[in-house]
Image 1: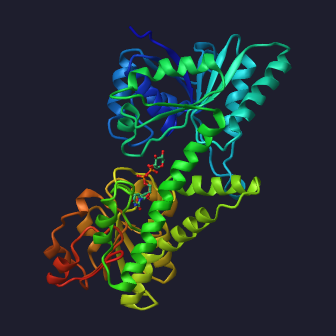
Image 2 (image 1 turned 90 degrees about the vertical axis):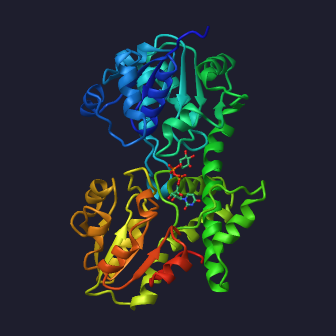
Length: 441
Ligand code: UDX
């Protein structure tokens, strides 16, 4: 039988908390460390800092079982386990490069206190070469203390989608482990053994390749989206339908159906940040990434599409107009507003003098933090439409998929829908008497 393992996770943000809860769920003893005392107090009381399906139940179950604990005590956290996972934030710093100060600080506090062999696992999304920096920080701290202790730094990037993070962790497509230390590799192999299903999920590689794998995966996915957005723009000009084209190309298994949806541009905490960071890394090494440059430019342009289409219908000035907006979050099933395309849409509307009445099932609170009272936050999809000249859709929430079109038509001042997520059948909406603009159809 597999031995229970102990591990410390530094940082109870999105990645750290999901990782900690899921690793506890398979029987490990997990201690989560965070500098934020109020967050730790909340977590102990079962209050989640993020909205993620299944997470709350997982945290409370494992906390009750004593396998998952939260602390602010650094001494306790470092002494607790051989495995020290770093899952702190890496916000975009100067000119888009990831800011590593929290990662390096986490490494230093381990180096300052460790008394035996430690495996430091980089879980945060960090640029290639970070494991070396983490190793150097620890070496410096040890040298400062005048002690020599063995340690290894391993890269173990996460591939969690918001809204499906628990599921992604429990049933991974692959687990990437970059390690140049045989002993550390064995520990990681044991840690992830419960997640192997029909076939080997562990993809072992060297540290730098693992660090690059994370960025390459997100850059490839971002590329698919920008490619489809540009094809959609072309389809419009050619009077073709991108939805039919999507099905036609997706049937090729080399292309596949997933992640081929044109829309209002990609957003969120990963794609925009990681694409920029990878470009900065390439620049720093004198390598040109022409494709990614275009991916980013295409995405920036796509975020303006909804307002451009609206202006084509209503004229350049939107003064005196009220525009309803369905969806604020960067994607459904999350309240995350980071780099949400809706923000670009709202800026464009306000700049042209429109008032905005927005509805989102969960993200209004987060949006209010960013936008304050610059827009109106409606309590329901229908309430957002009252007095509005048009409806814009920025997020494909399920509850927007089959609305009461009669009620929409009665409520809107004119029957104009501009849909950034291709939710409806254009022929059907036209039959109902709507002016309906979508993406690439
Ligand atoms: C992403 C990756 O999927 C995940 O593997 C990685 O670890 C973190 O980044 P996430 O940011 O949660 O996850 O969102 P995801 O569902 O991938 O969507 C990203 C953005 O792309 C959203 O704005 C979404 O609307 C957009 N998108 C996605 C499209 O416009 N079209 C698509 O076909 C798919």
